[in-house]
Length: 326
Image 1 (cartoon, rainbow, N blue to C red):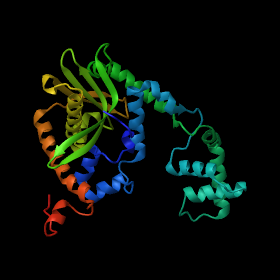
Image 2: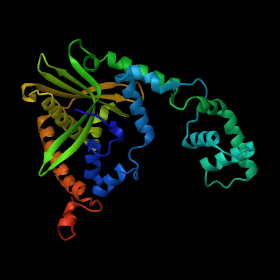
Image 3: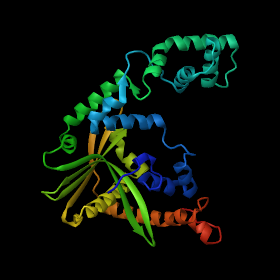
């Protein structure tokens, strides 16, 4: 298996997320997402999940990517925008820098010039150390001590949870991978679908012939996680990952039918006491139905990828332009 392009940069291959975009909103939305013309889940939500994933799954890399500052940092989008605009400003006069940054961050306000300047000076003084930090550290993501306490609490809760601890512990002599990138293919009709998957964690126990897939999910309510499973169709994601694993095993010359498979989600609450629960996701009925859904979606996508027609559904192009409500 040859990986030439990092996972998130490779738009030539189809991810589970791409299938979700296609199923929910159609081919044009998928194409716009791939081209960066549409915005998905908010960046702040994804940032917290990425931070937790790296802390738990890539601890050696965590402090190469994150830094704690012991002074006040901007909390709102406008405060962050002000600091960054001020830092990057090409204005020569201090007053012009302040006004430019304030107008950019707080556009649409009807304040007088003097009032804006007063507010801008207050912000510049309040976040002076943060602005100085921007000059010194462009490669780190800033986190707070509250963030670090949350991460430590999550790690403690995982260590105290018998199943979560077992799933995240490496066993000497047993093959395991965190953030496991697989580029794989799936034949559909006369097309070979180019697919990609990034698995949070996968364990290949070749002695006991067992494969264990583990996915970490963050949630605001770990006790209503069924809602998240249904909303984001995590069974489809698990199925997609299992298809990737099946391809990987075949590529390694191993018959996956000789192995037992297990799949789990470790759900982590991002508020409160950061409770942790582990859910068994290996439900054959659910997984089989999602496999059919994935194959159907890729069959439809084969038309769009091969023709370059993205504005409407395949049915629209091949028939009289009418579509069925679903």
